[in-house]
Length: 324
Image (cartoon, rainbow, N blue to C red; front, side):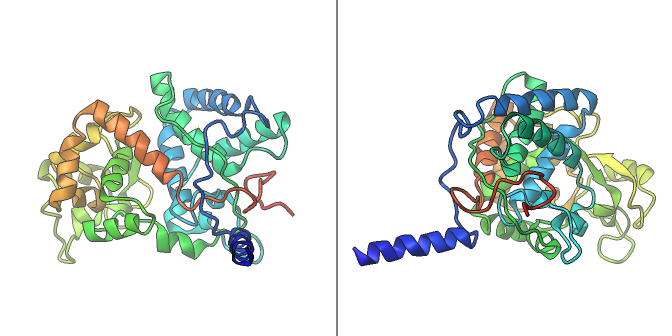
């Protein structure tokens, strides 16, 4: 009996310390406490996406960058303070956007049911709803019940986010560290069917791949020549290029056919073809229905990374600052 009490006490301490990992997410978590909550998110997202068709890519990326650092706890949304530099100031996060959309949704939810819906849940729902606008139906199920973290450290983003120049070994290690599989890696990379990439994240493939002013031989030469007309050189940090040419606002499985033509934009895209196991998954995802199904399942797994639930964390009143 004493041992049982001791274990419960230990678990409570772990939760307080913020490492409470949750199988405690569930469907319709807010059905009694904020019954209109999910509908408010959906309505707001439809309004924003109709004005900004590039928003789905931005919100998927924001959710991904949140989940890979301290789990899906909304830590990416926190602003820096006088004594702390937050995740959003980290180099990989400087091009993130969509924070204003999350703030707008949070404001509406606080007016409807103050202190109930977490910023982490808003981000998970907003990412799903933004992609779903194109289809007029929810494309995957989002379980809710996440709570918001109180810590956001710039250096942790750099240490935890997979880089666009990673090889397959580094990518697999990154995903394994979050309890995701190589299958999740290939499926979630398919999010690159929407959005843009900054030239400086792939220009070494065009201008200086091995330090000798050469081009990446695994990149389709015709495509490389096209990219050279867009990017001004290694120091071009402002130009962006569609990751899925001519279709960067349409969520589909084009990414995989582009990849098999050696037109993946980043080294981390091309890397998926360098191991048999990942290359085979790429080929399987050429079937669009298969991709949609698998994408939803992998997003659900990603959305459960190291979540704070029950009494861990807090429900932030404003997504960019911890409660005082």
